[in-house]
Length: 139
Image 1 (cartoon, rainbow, N blue to C red):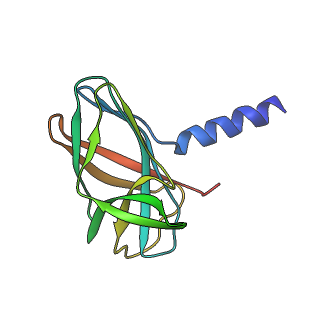
Image 2: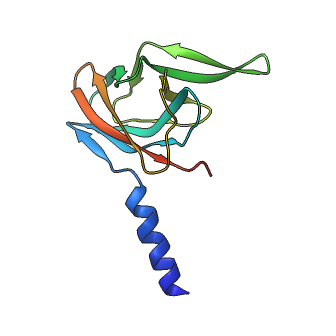
């Protein structure tokens, strides 16, 4: 049994995302779920160990890449486009289902487990940070 657990941990860690750092900004474990559709979403945790900054854009090799925020309004979940996301001084922002997320639209084909989606996060002060979203199976 212990060998099975070790094997599963090794397999799981081999497809899990890594962290990326640029100055005071850290992007923790960017990931996306597998999809068969024409769009996909990216998620990560963003931490800032320094002064406030602004995430101004996310770019990738897809027809449209946008930052969205899911919000509940009058009992209905809506997605709203965000042109910027303020990153608070010594703060943390979660990009996850039901909140902030990156939308990749106009996919030619779906994403499968283990695929890596290259993107660049553009911060006002820190600059550009290239990352890879690792595609995982939806739990």
